[in-house]
Amino acid sequence: MKLVRTKVTTPRPVDEVYGFLVDFENQVRWRFDVLTSELIAGELGEVGARYRQRVKPGRRIQLSEVVLAEARPSSEVAFRTLDSGPVTVSGAWHIRDGSGRTEVVCEVAIATRGPLRLVEPLLGPSLRKIAARYEKALAERLNGH
Image (cartoon, rainbow, N blue to C red; front, side, top):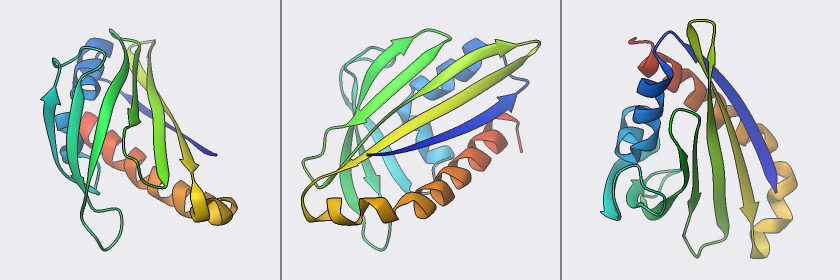
């Protein structure tokens, strides 16, 4: 399993940041590889809400299902993929108020299965590069750039 951690700081209030992150349809606005994200089951902001996303992690477009695994208003939004493929992604955005600024710490775990597990030790640099792009894009979106 590979772990990636990023951090974004914004002047936006904690509740506004939480509202943005708990609605996975917003991911198309800042994640370069998410083409569409649609709520398909459950209610917005409720644990168990499921989203179908069209993602393009490389050259191919694929469907992915993501579930809202934890939703603690103004403090945490957690998720995990439900796909049966060789990669499972889970993680959380931890939201904290810090002296007039909101801090978002994202921790993501990528687990591989089957033959892909053999190359998992080599994934670190590419995962950090992707995480850095997400971090930059989320900061730009939250800070109005």
